[in-house]
Length: 244
Image (cartoon, rainbow, N blue to C red; front, side, top):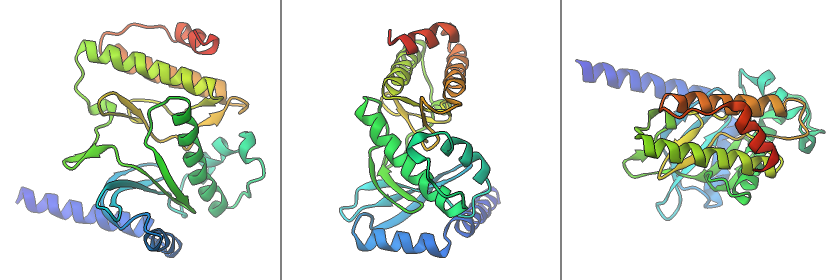
């Protein structure tokens, strides 16, 4: 009976996902990605968030990919706007929902490229079309990599992760970027930390960039405090900004 209920819940979740994601425009975009042999087919859902759904897909060689879809009829349009407005890279974006969502997808693609170039470990971006982003799949055939919040870390590993994440924050800052939503929910644990969900990342010229940096640092410090690592946000902020 329990298994039956689980299956019913799973089917309801799939139905909910399909109805909220696969509008006609998205289906046409996915069809074009398939005809261009960038992906072969979508396999199964990996995650859903405030502004997107992520699926495991296969390329034509059978290799796993991650496909991130940003629904056009998103309910967080206004939240997206605050991360786009003030970013000099996207000053002339139209303010209708479709334009903002398409820009968000391109923004994440560009941010991934810039972060990787700076030495931050992120999924490799492969292609972006309209509201669909194709990127490297982090995980194996057993399943996707766990979020940092779900990882089991001993004290030594926690210290290694903490130091590496701080180095990534420094690298982003040197590359004129702030993640803006960095936490144990937006980092994967896969032979070291992997930074994900970078669509909201902004340049240092953004009017909220400094506030976002402080929030990122507070989130990371708070999480690793639970693992016995005691650091002050103010001290790390100074190191980030001085490139120490």
